[in-house]
Image (cartoon, rainbow, N blue to C red; front, side):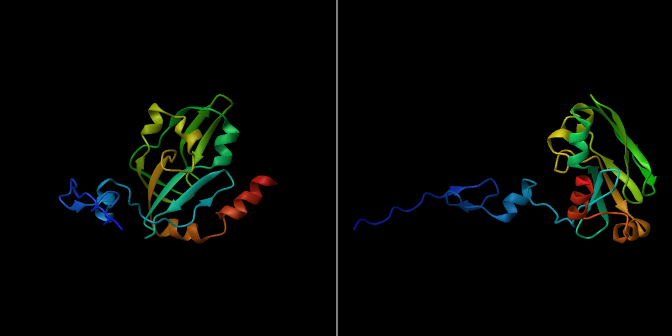
Length: 167
């Protein structure tokens, strides 16, 4: 029986000794790969979605996959002005496609604090990942009114929204 060879150690950028394929959560956090856990996405009848951060203080807004497919190739996105105080149902921007144009409505009340400026240069990101990390439209700080709207009857969970789009 031959003895097993010792794995070769390397020194990582963070100064820690590593064996091949060994890493740490600290290393991933520095790469920006550790994300806040989000609450369930909720949808409007106008095909926007909102996803709250785990602490319920921030939300991400976008258009649904259903809406993106219905619009066709998005060629222009009008982003919201920053900052912008809004009430649920207010128009915060617009999307234009080869087929049509549509206003983007905020699902809940709050203060728009960030817009996805990547969409100005590459509006097609909405078509590629409308409900993902690159196709979102805006970030919103949620106040008490927004929290009660989140918990209210107007927004649909994923299963209810799926049934709504199949009607």
